[in-house]
Image (tube, rainbow, N blue to C red; front, top):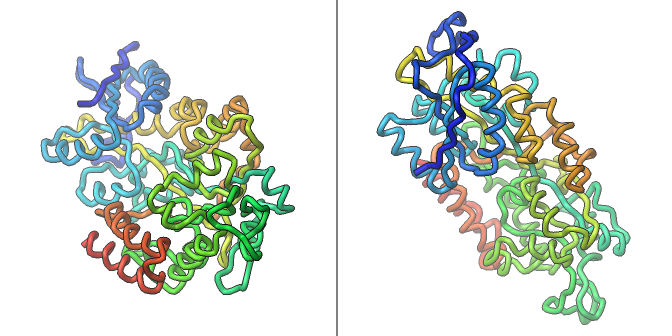
Length: 439
């Protein structure tokens, strides 16, 4: 069962305007509930719930609407969702991710929030907002978002006389800046590098780049940087294109050529690359902003590390971006709609999202909060002032069962990194497995 945080009603209802486009309700309809009734909101993060307490307490003060906040673990969250749909007992507002968004929208459970967002959506980061646009409608209020980044052990990079600020890859070239720097960073116990006589791969003391089958941090950005896509515009899995095959084979070859940790080992231990970086043994880790907390806390002052754009391909740098949004559930009672709309609008305002930004929970979706977010990280010892919002991004999987489909594909793609098959052999098989899962 969810834990519950009840934010007590502190003022009388103020009769604030409702939102016109939601289920036909009038903008003159008061945003109020029957006495003793509350709005329910559900999230899957205890840290976010703690931050939301301050935000929702202020919402209650301003509107008189009481909000009961529920927290479930990630696994319980998605297990409970279909049960609540069947029982018609969904909360009024849910956290939603992109992998499950399309299915929820197709089931007719979500409110279209175009009128709620009117005048507000322009204040949100497009890269997060656009992930919740579908069928000419907007179905979610973005709360936080993340994107892929490259982090570098600056001491190792400097010793290799390298520059991690604008790395690129090109599968068609005999070498490229990424391979050159990864080779210089990779050193065995005798001080030798890959390609030199006597180099001992099993005796490496430092490693080059985190080439491993991580969908968000590595595969997504590399396939997109090569000009491919994980899914086409219709949502069909499409990564087994010529570009996708080239990108995946390139990554597997980095491991086979000893410029990255062993593919067999990274498949067996998905956290290996990050752990090597935390230990100061990996020069270049492509990860995401979601790892900033771990990096800051675990590295401390052990060594200097910096944040850079993801490795660019022939089509440029394409970090994968994903976002969490607050979605409204279509009420059975239309009289409830103005209150749900009022809560969604509050969650889209800077004041509504501020506690999330100040607690460094993802990147704020509201542009006006970026400064507060940067300052909060600065207080924690990390300078993010140069971290820019990416212009061109790779997209996360979307659609019914897309997360399951990606999981099945990754099991097949793992064989390329183990050396069991080439990308040309494995990716069509992986793509078909993914399509079968979605059908």
